[in-house]
Length: 449
Image (tube, rainbow, N blue to C red):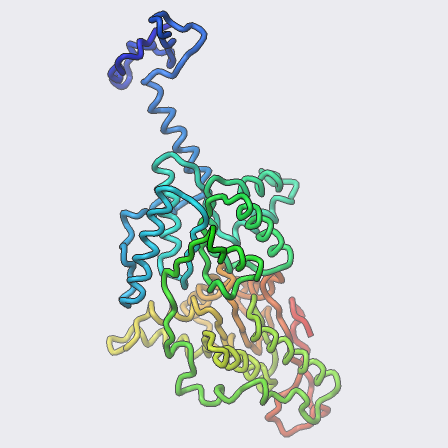
């Protein structure tokens, strides 16, 4: 066995050759202060230290759960962000400096707030990668993924037991929780998040939280922890500026007048069953307007009141000075096509992102569009993005769910996020009495009436 004097580091052996110090053993006996070999101890030879460092780094990267986000660093992030607005640039610069300071010495909680696409996830991932570059452990996960993993951990086929995974997240030396607010707010989800955040709050464990909604809109128990001045530091990466995209355009004069006050669910000539059904639709829409969460799908024939209720939701949000976007699906696709014209005043990306990422989106007349492959692809991209991000969405349609493209309809009927309600009231614009009409019975698949 080789003996290492500890005086000088030997030069590394050329690749493929046997190390002259350890003779290929990979470890050596260090010397005691007396100069004699300490045969009771062994230490790694220099020739193996590089491999051990690489192995440790590989384990840390695997543990971090960053995946493709390992490419997001401070080096490829603009310190002032990508917004052309000077106010947003100044806010981003403050958040950037705070993130770099936190990455050098994580203490307390760093809260990053802003709309989708403003760079807050890049900042959070840059913190993680900076810590990894210095061989410190960090665990990164989005809130919806965390809850999905916890649910799947109950399965007998789960690779990691529920308790083991939850403790791993709760006690991570540095936890980065992305997309807080994008999860489905079920009682179970609220309980798990409360347990996680309460543990880390009481233990004062370093934590980065990225939220896609304003702090004031979060659950009260979460909000009180995130706003604690002794532990938490909040940085608004970018504020959504008030703009015409969250107000009625000139083509929506009729929808501007569609409020809950003007919705008559007591319509004359309705059968009792229809009146009760219409009142229930009214209550569901009003509750959604007050606290938008998940998806609300309103089905029914033309003129049954579904568009009025959907527009009333948008009007309610506008009156509360909150954003919402009302879109007629066929018109949206027409506008999207028109952006390819050189004369278009708005780019394709601007229009598509505006609809895809709106905090609350109303898609009216879904299923009335032309069913071209291009139209199906664009609608799927919007629906899939909002489904994964758990963004509040209202959809009106006169189609049966099995008449809608299955990749889309499968998201419509997911009970974890969506409520499908079938309005059985007839067209209020018709002259015939309800008793003379055949009342449609829709919503066989995943609907409520």
